[in-house]
Image (cartoon, rainbow, N blue to C red; front, side, top):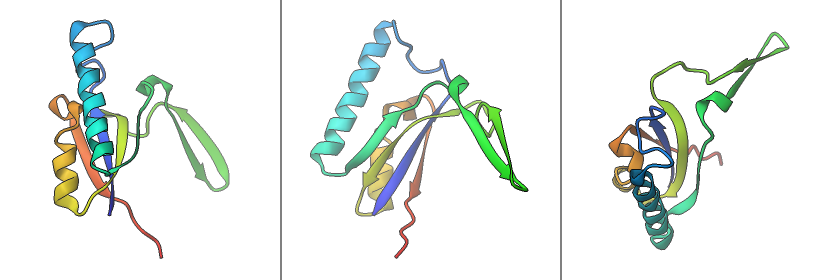
Amino acid sequence: MQFLCLIYGTEGKDPQPGTEAFGAYIQEYEAFTAMCVENGVFKGGEALQPVATASTVTTENGKVEIMDGPFAETKEQLGGYYLLDCKDLDEALSYAAKIPTAKYGRVEVRPIMTFE
C-alpha cells in the first residue's frame, strides 16, 4: 500500500544552508532516503522550493484565478514529500517518524487512494 508523507515545517526553524548543522541535517536526509531505497519502500520524494515561489490556482464559474503563495496561510508550510510503499499504516508511520524534519515540524501520512 502506498503512503504519501507530507513534510511540513516553519521556514527558517530547521538547520539553514551555510551553517554547520545544515550539513549534518542533509546527511540525515541522505541516510533516510538510502534506508528507504534499501528496504524497497521508496517510490519517490523531493524537497520543494520555498513557499514564496508557490502559486495557487482556482477555477470558479469558468474563470481562472491565480494567487501568489500557498492556499493555506499557516505557520508551517509544505516543504517536501516521500512516497513510500509500506505493508500497512503502522509501517508508514514508523518511517515518517524517521524523516529528519519530524524533529522541527510535522509529517502528515496519507494513504494513496487506488481506483480500480
